[in-house]
Image (cartoon, rainbow, N blue to C red; front, side):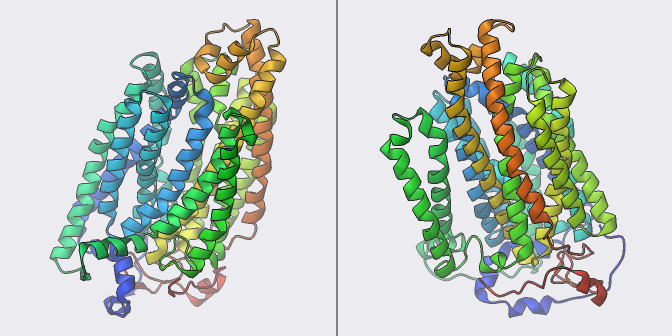
Length: 591
């Protein structure tokens, strides 16, 4: 995909200098470099088309199933559990990324896609057949491993097959289906909810996802097989019993570290959404125990990762890499801000705005559409200007403006244009920020670390999302019952509890009725505080971006090794250009 031909020299001999441990840990990376030598014109087109198909089904899922959750939980009287489910989902989405990335590195990209497909199908079958709200939560946790894997692997493969100057644009183009599905998906979800029901909405993806992913899986496994057949991939023989190999794989995946991190985050965040509905609230011993254990496990994880983990989730070299650390912090704060206002936004517009269901679906997708379009714009800017820092700063500034505007525009009597513009501005800024921070992080590490650094940045980003969902749930569950009591003093407690627990019960009240108007006032007041919190958390990313290094985006796979996509040295970076790079080279020293 390069415009210019750069002189190259083969460095196959460098592979022989790698240690046995490194070969085992990065077999998937070596396989990727080898497949570049077997891909022809037609097979590469097959790869791009199958990637596009995977991106399309990912976006169709994201633009339809989100609106089902409110109705699925409400059908069991569990609407207040949305934030709890989304917090648990965010934790799995976060912790699952390093697992999928390590499998993609240790085994192959194709093998990781197979695992993703299995989780996807099982999760949606469980949700579609759920007899109670707890089963929905369980299905969402299983499905989340598939969803996060599909998102991550697409970005990893794009990093494998594109040079830095093209990566932002190609990565953004993979989100282009969101523009189409914002309208197609909205119509589908509206018809599903008014017709077949939310169960079919989830269940149909158990059929559609395998059909969409199989071409990509077949293409990747074919290239892997052909590369091995031609002797381009030398398999490192592993001695020992099956049990020993399983233990070795668990060490490479850092299963213990991931378990400690996931458990700690879950125990800290879940009580925030559960305490208000638990017996005696925060006086419940189980709530206190979860918080204490979660907080204690965090330093245990850090000590274990620093001293004992052979292949830690977050290697030391990542913690010493300024670009990676700042990109992770930007993502974490940005997602905290996003989920604070977004977790209950769909429920808010369904109840507060006099819009038909289809228009509510269009509104909820408006931020996604603008995010996608301006991510592509940012990718084009990166392609020609070869730098990303100032695009990142501009994007985060616009996103902060959109978050602040929502404090005023959220009201039931605010103009439709104002409330829509609050979402459009957040999407414009978010699209510019997402592409630039990810490309910057990937540019700052060698190819062998690309998958894991992508996973680590997204891990921190998703943990930020979990924090945002948890805080939103805590604010909603603590404030909403009080606001309902304040604005509906003439309604008995049992009816207020039903209004609190189900959108169906609220929607059954006609607009203009005292009950509906009282609920609208309660929703309005709670959403105000969610938007205030979201705006506060949108400030740190902008400040952090001012210290972001500004790597040169050239014709190499990354900005520190000077190698092309097949592992060959590319003599395109001049000494002057290297001096302009803002970060020191990343060493290959093992963490």
